[in-house]
Length: 320
Ligand SMILES: C[S@@+](CC[C@H](N)C(=O)[O-])C[C@H]1O[C@@H](n2cnc3c(N)ncnc32)[C@H](O)[C@@H]1O
Image (cartoon, rainbow, N blue to C red; front, side):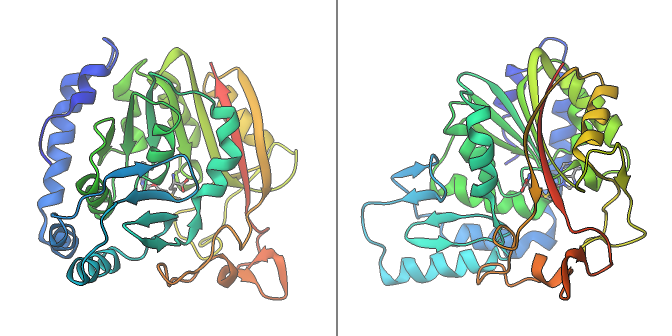
């Protein structure tokens, strides 16, 4: 885990490679913390199980094996997968076990895929990569390296399980945050910033950092929770929003474009803008959590329980 970081050699000459090397090795120390013992043991429990192949170009990212699992192997697999619950992003299919996650992340990718097009030979960043679901979908578009930025150490172990089942040398999961993109000057061909900006107090500042992190012909895909309308406005909840803490600015699509404009981007392509549905985010057996339906007003699903407009999602492609 504290091993080589081959992606460091792939960054531009302008990137602050030494600072990044020191930073990622110090962040990796978090993985040794005893609070992750449950996850560590879960991954180790099936370290002998290997997939023959991985399929990343379909809704379910699938780890497949030709030989059937023995009863003991199946039992250990189930126990490992259960220890890594709740599965919030997916779906996955792991050695015969279908994992229906809280989020139908495949729907998001389906809406983005045509605009994403080929990532052949590209250095790609996935900011807020969660368990890595989208990193696998990016791989299927030809990315040379995908660097996942995900500071939540628990999710590192889910990704470590995937890598233990089937190693993909092109995928790199780091405990970095969006704020660290400033260290990557002119390094990414494509950056994905999906489900991140509204969780931060300074979305324009983060867009500026991303602007610096992409190559001159680079691009950034944004998915931001927001509100409906064309007015240049955003909503700041007093406290929780749809049950979630840490929600700061919910923009209209126009406001999202204005943030990007003021961060130095000049070209915009609107990809998608629609209400978030309870088909896309819902409680499942693998994620028995309170989900969107629990956080909308039961009398009027156009409103959250707190009385705010119900969430929209805006997807936007931005370029310098
Ligand atoms: C709403 S989820 C979005 C996940 C995924 N990108 C998607 O679109 O479904 C936000 C993710 O960002 C991660 N995160 C939290 N703080 C972050 C930070 N400072 N930089 C990058 N990601 C962060 C969270 O742990 C979580 O996995």
